[in-house]
Length: 290
Image (tube, rainbow, N blue to C red; front, side):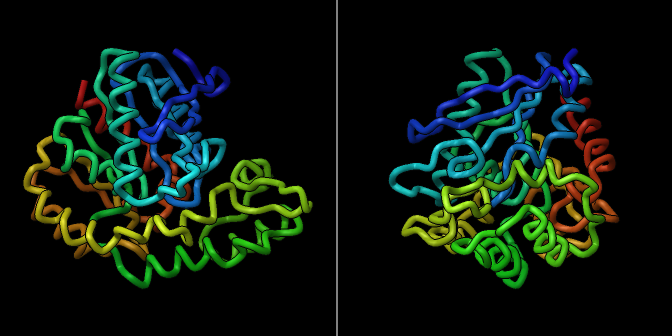
């Protein structure tokens, strides 16, 4: 079994032919595909993916299109449909390489992309873990998150410390990290000497941005939830600004076979706020799938 030190870098091909860079932990089964939220990178899953790899599974944490080390599509295609197509392409590649199905573990953007993939292409995924996301999101929560993402999109930051202060102001409940090494992985150092978030600005502002089909997604997906038959786990941060408990309960009414866990001391960034609890929950769920 591999541990964190045995992480291997891999490159997949997305639906549009773009490179998607990943870290792979472990070589067993089931296979868990970790898909981060908008504006994040694969490194947000480091601890959870390493833990599953060490437990004998295979965990793949990927930079989604336009994020981290993965390609920025020339056509700026960042709609939910584009991300869902990538999930389908990744699941097909995983099955071809390993002979196993894919358990998608998706936070926010990654969760909605996986959900959209499975309801429009039934049977693509072996199972689905939705991390603090359902089709019914609080508009104020979406605005807050996207507001933070876009606030310094052009200006950037003069230093890593400046970026850390911005994050601390946005998430005052989370202790400041002792090291900035983790933050460094979520920023790129541009030619002008300033740090900017490691994602394509067209993700928010382009003609085919993540908001381009959000209303259609919210309208169409709830009606399709009845087709969802694979095992599902919904993990919500009890202090989430994006998903209310009522929204989670509404999802469970549409998908009654889904399992549900509230993580008490977590907000929207569940894995970052309470990683040990989150990892325990996911590992128990994966164990039941054999």
